[in-house]
Amino acid sequence: MTQPVQPIFILPEGTQRNSGKNAQRNNIMAAKLVAETVRTTLGPKGMDKMLVDSLGDVTVTNDGVTILEEMSIEHPTAKMIVEIARTQEDEVGDGTTTAVVIAGELLKKAEELLDMEIHPSVIVKGYRIAAEKAQVILNNISETVSEKDIELLKKIAATAMTGKGTGSNKDNLADIVVLSVLQVMDKENGLITIDKDDIKLEKKVGENIEETQLVQGIVLDKERVHSNMPKTVKNAKTALLDCPIEIKNTETDAKIQITDPSQMQAFLDMEEKMLKDMIDKIVSAGANVVFCQKGIDDIAQHFLAKKGIYAIRRVKKSDMEKLSKATNANIISNLDDLSQKDLGKAGIVHGKKIGDEEMTFVEECINPKAVTILIRGSTEHVIDEVNRAMTDSIGDVIAGLKIGKVVAGAGSTEIEVARNLRHYAESLSGREQLAVRAFAETMEIIPRTLAENSGLDPINVLTELKSAHDKGKKWAGIDVFSGKVIDAWKAGVIEPLKVKTQAISSASEVATMILRIDDVIASGPAEKHNIPMPETQEQ
Ligand code: ADP
Ligand code: MG
Image (tube, rainbow, N blue to C red; front, side):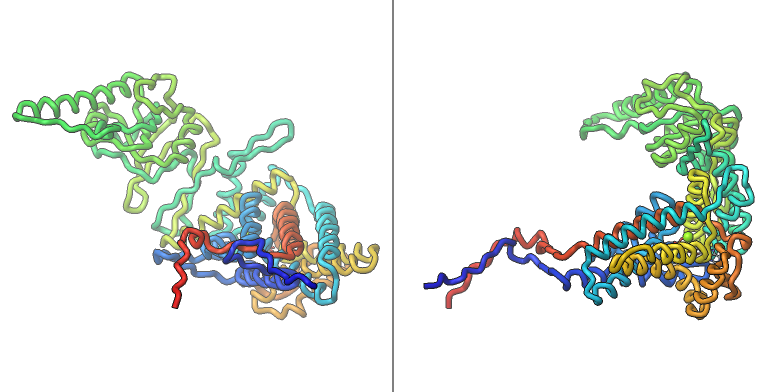
């Protein structure tokens, strides 16, 4: 007698499961879709995307990570690809599209190998070997850069900005980027440290990109709270407060009953006195400039103005930190604690009209590392895109200096890596060799995409590039404007080595991770479990 087979459920109801080849193909498809989306934006001739969020706000951009983040992608595998862009953004600041495109192509090539019945674990192994070898090749072909190579640094800065809405102002902006990075750089025993947060980017709509300037100090998009305050304070002693100069914000709701007008007056007088006491504390500490992270009461503003103190309110927390570093001041949370030693110093603090509005400039700071790039442009969208271009550019110059190594762009590096990898693959046996070759071919997606996005014939371009590299021209790249093969190094298309090493390592890590998944188990939406099961209606 055979036992009847009972179905066994190990997963809760509503769980979706997708396993084996099906899961793999699905995941690869999702990753390829993400890569395909950003692919058209790669390079100086790449197109832009217009993103409209749920509130109707519009972003026009060419920046990989911005596009992917604004898209609010939901597919779990697609999200893993977005992560690559984020890592790239955090580690370098540039090369986000490159990283995602490489990951997508690695998976596309893996799919072809899967079709040839090659086991995923073999592909994963081959990819890992190739990724490691690629790092070695990249290191070998790179050139050195130091803080003394100003011209080279400017080329790195300009390359990062090409095609990102900076137009003919690229060189001017590149100068600003290099100057600001060098200013915040620290070098001790040959070790370079640079904190990109030391460079403040401030945007103000108006004028042209051309008017973008480097300010020695901190610029805040805030004006004096009271027009009777001095417009300029020399030898500024700055107090940084993260408490309000107000008294209404009591913790508990108090109720006062007033029965006759004299009581009302007494109450107001008391309030005024409390505010005056607060201002007295600021005055006796010796401050002549106040940066307040919270609000400043109207009456307090009046008292501050009477004492000749320059004050601004609702300063962003991140700006308070920058001010603290720049003027060497302590941020104080309780006015009672404020004393002379907490104050910072700046040569001059002044309100300056930029466009229609006044901004506060804190200049000649005691810490010379305080710099602000004040970005100008005709519209909000233009400025935002320039801002992103500048961030990429700053990231690239920093990455170049920190590692001290650079390579040429325009697809030259990728072709050189591919050529070396193919050569290396010959030393391997059988199936792994196929995977390493696939990895090598993947590298060619970058020059191919650059060509495609420029309206050139990718096959012709790749053939020409490969033959130039075979002749030993390691920096042969593609001139996206003329379609000709050029020496990318001589043409000044220079990128930090780190953009390439990071892009390849994170792309291959995620691609191999995705390839090793053979089961996707997704639990149903969380709310479902809370819904009581309806009673079954008996008929
Ligand atoms: P990513 O987000 O990956 O940085 P970009 O749109 O910035 O994407 O494009 C970077 C690619 O464009 C790199 O491969 C770089 O070498 C190439 N590139 C930049 N400037 C030029 C140029 N003047 N000529 C050809 N290629 C360029
Ligand atoms: Mg870029």
